[in-house]
Image 1: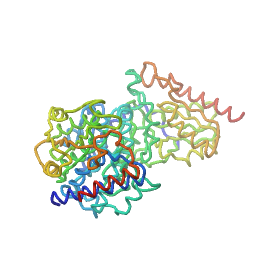
Image 2: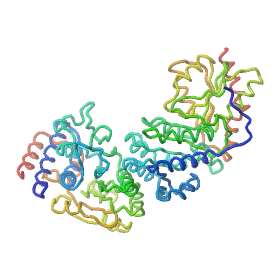
Image 3: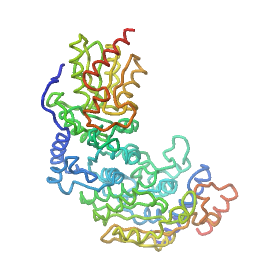
Image 4: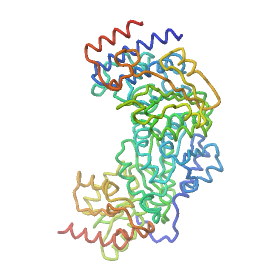
Length: 269
Length: 320
């Protein structure tokens, strides 16, 4: 998919995500809007995947470590053909496969269960190491939140990835500068992230994570070391009144706000 | 079947674990060992020598170790994730819950030097909570072999079992109890001694103490049944219910806290299906004082003679 098509798809994912959160009355819309460009670029351009063969051993692996933004992943998986798009309307409903955090044993395309933060990167290191052992050609991608990088387990995994020489691993940090309760800077300010990752012998690229023209080449980059993309994003991206507002971490829009948001996202289509 | 109880030779079950894993790995190239710097204490030196690329040492980082195990399984490898039981289970409990059990990752967790094997090193290094922490998790069989034969059988069984499990191994020497060639069956108790007056149930390092206690009871005219219950989850309900109905009293003993372990698991079955008097022996809900595992087991009332006394007292309650 070309950049302009990816941009259009990202808008559609945002619209469907917004509706799902509005109808379910719950979700993590701010962090979903910030990460959707990365998800769209991965699923519609970068990942070698086969929706009809979700367990194909050669598939690229993707782990959404910030599992609380599951709804954005569900919408992306549906648009890509892993699950029926009409199933999105069951999000958070009793017995739906689509609960608040992704389940790999229920939802095709999900690789490992996430939700508690700091879990996805160690698992992704194991996936990339497995490819090194077996000679498989797949690449492993993992998305964490920036607040999530406060979890110590991530730094254990970062050290291991460098030690193991995992040039088949890409970490994308969704650096939207806000965590649940406050700004990153007012909580435990681990920014700037680049020097920290570089100190651990990773290659680091910084991009505007809501600019598809920067997202795609960064994801497609291959080097000789584990690669970290620090994706500078906006929480609530695409919806004016949500952007960079901490209260939209998991707030749900009312009817009037929903209609404004739909209008804003639709205008660009 | 009365198994031999006075075998003088004691074996470190880690040797059986290591030898079996090396044999399996020679046949199956997907088998990898993952460890946290603990190559020596997990007895993985031979594995490292034979399969250097397949020994994945993440350093002193247990949370990452368990997550890496889950990822290796996703990538088609068959990982045995090995570490000292207190750190493997305690430090990475959430990874075991989310990445292994909930994700149903085909990872074999091997807790080394469990119980109070690190006796004198103190309660930080004791793993007397792991039955409770592990057996509450869905999808995760919890297994504590009683001797080197059952250890080898369980390690081999784990490779063929499609799903995660937790193997709880000790380093404290134990005699042979099960016959050579014994096959491990998940969730099946082994009847080591038939009896009708009381049933003694244990696993791991306590099974042979139970056998000695049964000998002492026999001298006192009491016929004790002995069940080796390696699988704490899924538990052998039928064997426990039969023991309750046929012997009317059950004593459990474990190298674990009396809260939430083997005794608790047996009691859950007993109260639901066949209430009879029970006595649960174990670490009585305290941080243990200084001493070796053997000393501490005696200290906490699990010397064979003390077990026999507890059984005799329990039988009196049955008759009251």
